[in-house]
Length: 439
Image (tube, rainbow, N blue to C red; front, side, top):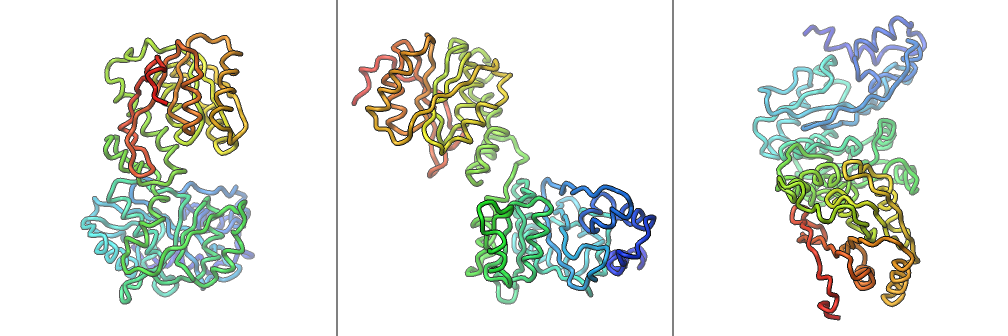
């Protein structure tokens, strides 16, 4: 590699956007490759008569996204003053990437020591860009947080979420997280490239202005602070950032999937359950006997919509109902209702799905009256009543007031705190003789 190659990026920082010729603009875009839009200003693409498109950040095992701010970049430079650099941890290479500066290689070695991750090496996911001579014009300390988190997840086989970005430096002398500069600039570029969550060290310079910028509920970026009152690096990353950063998992082993599911945020659990757990769990419940629940096919499934609505998806796929009636109270689970109504259930016979809404905060007596009237109005004769979801009065009213010949379903599952362990889920059928129910 020649010195020219090593100085190429720095030379771009000196290029003036005003005097840039179209042919040179095209050349630089081609030279930087598919991630040119990460580093070059949009005006460069205008000069080259090319459309600027936000590139999809690389993902997969070992990825980490470092937010860079170049203080020495000229105001009219063709290089953006702030951008995202995609890195990747690998465990099948002998050395760190040749295009990394020595200070970044040292940081990577220290992170490897912190995590006891022998055998891993760090690489820039932009092979045609060389930062090995960047010591004089770029600093890399604030890359500690995303690089540590990326390696931490990679060691467990977890895939990080590119909408979660961070910045944060670790003082190896004081053994704690330290503040970083330019958090406003980093937040802005994070939003531009699709981030939804931004983690930064508490009380970094500019944090008050940053909060003012993204304080509203409609703000495109949600802010999170990394704790600085601990000397344990794991505590800094794993308290809140790791569960939010965890996005997917390479294994299909039920034990591994369940461990991952329990460790992520609730807002991510539902999509992970539907995408990764439901197919495996259905196969585990049925085994090789695809007709195991055939006697219950084609019925009208009735269920409340509430927390844990993934079980409704499970019921539709397992019992293949002809109709699905979703009982709904209040606005809290409106998103769940709409998700199920618009779901793809072609593999389950594509049932008709409707819903019935009642006022919130009803007592058992009122709910029983409503449920009784509801069934009297309907012409269905073959019901599968799911009593799992909803509050106790809701599920109890559904059990007590459903037609006598209905089949009553309950999904048994064990809990880990407030989180169900999904692979303990099994369908059980309650007694049809309601006199057996002690009141």
